Image (cartoon, rainbow, N blue to C red; front, top):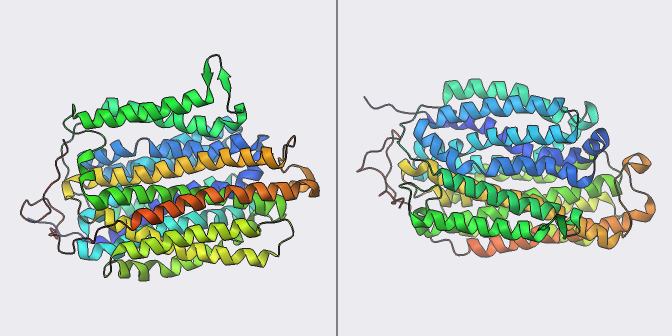
Amino acid sequence: MTKTYRPWPALWALVIGFFMILIDTTIVSVANPRIMEGLHTDINSVIWVTSAYLLAYAVPLLITGRLGDRFGPKKLYLSGLVVFTVASAWCGFAGDINMLIAARVLQGFGAAMMTPQTMAVITRIFPPDRRGIAMGIWGSVAGVATFVGPILGGILVDSLGWEWIFFINLPIGVVAFVLGWRLVPVLPIHSHHFDIPGVVLSAIGMFLLVFGLQEGQSYHWGTIAGPISVWSLIIAGVVILGIFVAWQAAGRNREPLLPLALFRDRNFSLANAAISTVGFTVTSLSVPLVFYFQLVLGLTPTESALMLVPMALINAALAQPVGRLVDRVNPRYIAFTGAILLAVALVWYSSIMSPDIWIGWLLLPSAVLGLANACVWSPISTTVTRNLPQRQAGAGSGVYNTTRQVGTVLGSAAIAALMQIRLAAELPGSSPSGAEAGGVLPEALREGFSSAMAQSLLLPAAVAFLGAIIVLFFAKPNQTVAWSAQGGDSPGREPAEIPLS
């Protein structure tokens, strides 16, 4: 007997957990100055609180997508939710920066177990002609979480302390688990073989690359220990990632970790490239902004978070209308508009950031960022999943979420490196920790610090512009893809499967 699924209740149940794990990619940014003060650490160490989470989030995504196909997306999602919630409690009780970073690694692993399952379930239970609005909601969650994170973080840090940005996950995690248990369907599973060498190569390559980028300025881009230099780590990371791709292309595994055959689909390839630029941009933009708001303008964490309210409100208001529009028009036009607006807003911020600006002017580019985010997530995520065969939903969503997270990891590492480079150039011989003057920099340092943060924003602006160029090459999606209403794998009712080797 064929079982009929209830897609909308399942979607809303998944959205709660997905929202929670994405909040934790940005909620720390507004608490960074307070964590620095509370745990007696520096800017580079506190940024590793975010980078460690993003790195542990990104590396396992390829295999956790496959594990969802093998053991069932519901089981993997709920297991990851438990790991994430327990790790959140550990984060809140961390007594030093090293313990906090270790807890964030575990938290990131839990998030990696959850994320591919959310997208795979949507792909398998929604028909293609309704997937646009479903992906619109899923994508808007990613966009809203990017900006709600700092707002919620600011309120919690000011009222209860930085630890509560992690403790807040405990009741949310319990609610998400109960709803997921009750509402997410048990879907058919598929047998898979796992590429262990691929896992090792991708993990080592990503770690070396991110560590080299983020720690470069700390070692003045020179020697770390003995013959090991910053550049040798970065080069080794790139080389190992190249070996990883070559290993996948060689086809020695029946099912490679990175199924390169999926990239034969033009839109799948371009959408993956585009989402990596979006992940890079939205993750990196908040770090210099929040430091500028608090250390230069003297805003509290809550006040600095409120500077991002226009982004969150506009993004949330436009999510569903944009999702419906994606089902009717070529997604590339919407995605191009959003990516261009991302770049424009960041250049606008960069041009007006100064110690004596009226803060009302800073709300205008914030509003543009909200419009931009509403226009990028849904069309890109809809484009990448529209033609995925159901048996490969987990693999495809794992690849997509991996490229998005690779973008966020590189964005976090690159913005940290660039901020340190610009601070060294604008404030030579100074070490602005924000501990002086009640968390506000001395007046003599504010101009240089503002310039360094403004210049840093030009990097995510350039990456957003690159994303706009990429989405221009999206092909018009096929609107008549066959689909099984029961989410099964009937050969005559789903797209022809793309071979994995």
